[in-house]
Image (tube, rainbow, N blue to C red):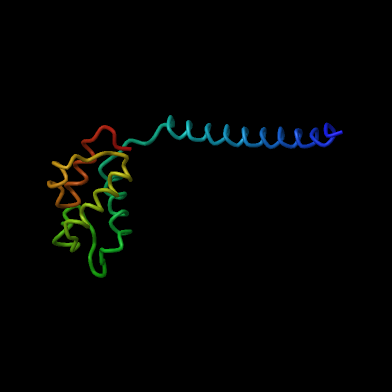
Length: 125
């Protein structure tokens, strides 16, 4: 008696399962494609552009009449305190998929210092 009721539900669940499996497969293939695709090499110009974009998007920086260059100081020119600089460094680590040791974070005072550090890191993406 209940077998007829369970059969359509079983078919529906199989279709749903196939749909979910298909979606997972397509997402997995996208992720593996992204991880193994050929990325353009990181040049200092590209690093500079991405770093300036991070700084321009940071809400604690007021850029009314200022232009961010490689010689721009985080504290003097942009008015960032030490905690703000730590937040910027964390954003840099996230953007370029790198880890910056604490010993080196004290040496990052200007945009150019950050560019040099990123350019010298072999794992930067």
